[in-house]
Image (cartoon, rainbow, N blue to C red; front, top):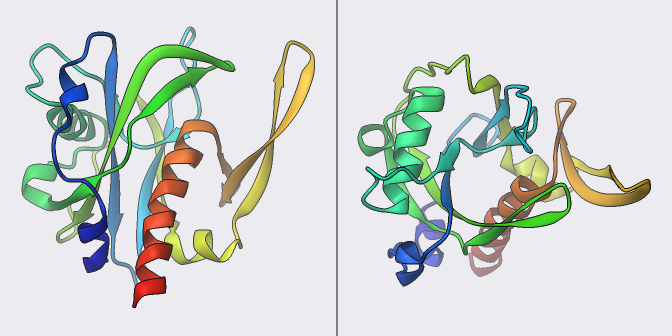
Length: 194
């Protein structure tokens, strides 16, 4: 994991101040006996939430009190899973921003993803209103293809097979799959240079 830090952008971007809705998520990594793992949450089922019940990273919309999108990711992670990233993790960097898509349409929101490495083993305290469960996905198995899957997305009576990961029966697809693939790309880059 050390070289991953060197390959990710750690700076705040000018886009942080752009108009329009913004959100931020935290990809939290930890060392485990079988290799690095990444924290995923399953969102609670909520009417009107386009990502209801989906697997994702802790995170959410930027609040007026957030000085930066990094602050948004830190605040949302603390609220959703009880981890204070400022005291329990090291920032490894930031992925490229991605446009939010819900039900096959761009929402106008842009999502920033920050990657952290846990220091120690902080206790997880889940927000029952927002998080149904958490799982730790094994990066080596995601890299090897052992967790590759296909998710069939149905929109307007049309079926679309989409790439996904199957993590213990939970399907990771869409935006989270895309951001997780970006992280895996950085890990692959590190392995090819080492």
